[in-house]
Structures are given as C-alpha cells and as structure tokens.
Length: 134
Image (cartoon, rainbow, N blue to C red):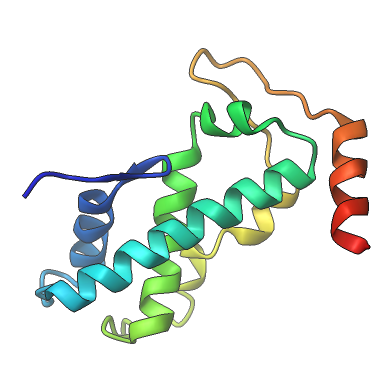
C-alpha cells in the first residue's frame, strides 16, 4: 500500500513507529490504522494551532524542518493513550511521556529546511489570541 501524507509526514511512518515501540508485537488492523490516521491528523492540527497562536505563519509552520518528528511523537502518544495496545515497558515508567511533546510547542525554536530560524510575528499572535478569547 502506498503511503499517504498527512501534515508533515506519512501514515506509514506512524505505523512503523507504533510497530517499533511495540517491539514488533502488534499487527495493525484496518481499524487500528484508521485510529492512527486520526491521531496523526489531530497531532498536525494541534501543532499548527499552537504555532499559529505564537504568530508563526501557516506557510512557515508547514516548512518547519522538525515538524515530522514532533507530529510522529505526538501522534504516537495519542495513539497509545487512545488504544492502550502498547503496554508499559518494565522498569521504564515514563517511556510514554517522551512522546508527549505538546508543551514544547509553546517555546520551541522553529528552523526551516535551510536551518534559518523562523520568526514569529507578535502582532499576528495577539490577533489570533484575541479571536480565540472572544
């Protein structure tokens, strides 16, 4: 099956990450893949919303070099929490927390593909915030 791009990355990349953290002890059914796809879409939308609130232009968000890593980690976190198919690893009580990178979005430095820092427009951030508060 051909990979489908959702946001920064592909559904196949998420399936591979889920299978990797499950140590190969999971076979994703069509229903599991549908859940994973929704989690991938949710992660992308959450990232866009968090960064646009900071004043980052949508085009700059989409050009973010680390976007795929963040999206995969957050989607993996959502998937595991949603399905509980991947069990806690013995002796590693915080293993799942490392995938929940949502708090990092508040102050992560965005770099584009060329390594240049993407600056936020503070005026845009204020306007977005005011729209959400009213």
